[in-house]
Image (cartoon, rainbow, N blue to C red):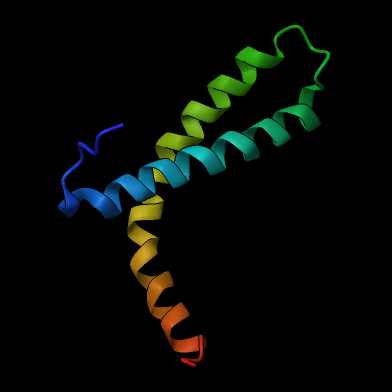
Length: 79
């Protein structure tokens, strides 16, 4: 695949994909725990939970990421 997103949007793209992948797995685990895989409406409930949590997590990731980077730079020793 040929790259198509401008470099200036790299941090937004990273946050978008990270939030999407993390919420996919976390919402799946939570849905399994709440209703079980055998529930006929499992897939629909999981996808609904995923979309909602992704919409919430994405802006949070963009807001929190700079603070997390600063914390990491303070606690990680340079070799």
